[in-house]
Image (cartoon, rainbow, N blue to C red):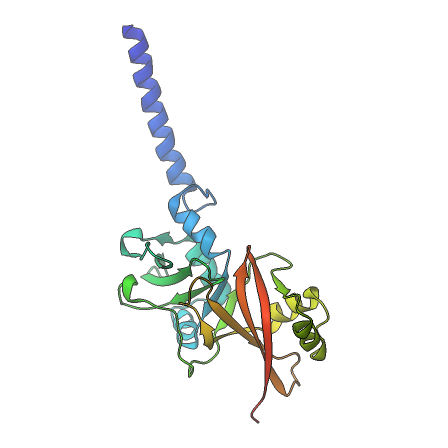
Amino acid sequence: MKDFFRRLKYYGLGFGIGTIMVMALFDNKGCSWFPSNRVKDNLFNRLIVVNQAALSELKEQGFTEDRFLNTIQEGSVDFGKSKKQGLDKVYRIDYETSKGKKEHCFMTMGDESFMTEIIFSRKKAVNISPSHSKAELPGKILFFPKNEFLFYMDSSSALIEKMKSIGIKNDKQLNSILRKNAQFNFGESFLLQHPKPIQCLQFKTSKSATEVVYVKCIWFKDKIKVYDLSTSPLDF
């Protein structure tokens, strides 16, 4: 019996050391069962958006857009300084710049929102909310999930006819043009509305287009449903 407990003690010691080594080696490297990585996986299942002020800030920190996305993927979630409860969560991501300076940003995550916004602020997470001002310039979409048919049109005949009138005949064309040209319209979005936040994207169908197209969307079964379309002439 004594030998049994001695072997059990060595087994437990070895298991504990192995667990610590696995956590040290693989944390932030794709092991989705770590809480920090589960949160980041959920964030990167959404469109990632910045307003114009945040875009300027990340460039001032010395990042390109792609490098910044890689950096926050490798960063750590500070759960103690995040807003983890409720329908509209806000997570603090800690990271380092290329010069070794410690920085942080916040990323919003509404339960039924397909968009997460990167926000630079010295406020606490509980005081962070998505951009909403009608005066806000359109946000830049830094990241789209890989789903080829992420966007799809509602089946209503009125919407389908509107889409055809601007040259979009099917979901494939819709996905292509949104990934290439879309911006996020904060002023026409209702990000804190529940149960389904309404989110608005805007785009031009070509560089020479004389109008802006606005599409209202909701998140439905891990895809983005476009249910309304309107246009507005450009001011020259």
